[in-house]
Structure formats: C-alpha cells, structure tokens
Image (tube, rainbow, N blue to C red):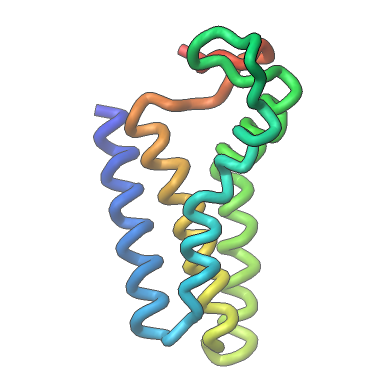
Length: 125
C-alpha cells in the first residue's frame, strides 16, 4: 500500500512538473536535469570490489541526502516564493518544475523499493 502511494505521488509530481513547463512556458531543462540529478551519487559510489547492489560507503551520505524529501521541498518553497514575488515568471516556473521532478524521482524510487542506504552502502529494509 505504501509503495502504491509513492507511485501515485510520483505520477502526480511528474504531471504537475510537465504541466508547469507546458502551461507556463518554462524551460524544460531543469525538469530533465533534476529528474536524474539524485542519481549523481552513483558516480561517486562505483567500485569494482562491491557486492551486488552495494554503493561505495563514501557515496552513501550524498545518496541519502539527495533521496530525502526535504531537499526538493526547499527548492519548491523557494520557487513558490520567487513565483509569487515576480508574478509567476517563467524562470521561477522552471525551478518549480525542477523541484517537482526531483520529488517524482524520489517517489518513484520508493515505489520500486529503493530507499535510503545503510552506512555500508546497502538498501535499508
């Protein structure tokens, strides 16, 4: 049930992000970049001597920080503030779409069973 809720949240955030880009004429690149941005930590976590599914422990803090909802929440709050202060500018709408895409990424990961990592780099159960 919880995974289904994450999936629904992911689809809602994705739809809202796309709607923001299309209706507000915002730039699409923040949406695309922030949809994949949280997985940048995999670049720091690659190593040939790891167990299957393990992320290198040096990358765990970055991975866990980028896969928590507070980070895109801050981006969304700042974007809402910018949009309200500048009468809904396209620039602010683009960053709002980025925050929604980041939220969607986290939600889809959680719906697929990928949560935060242990200090050793394995998925928490």
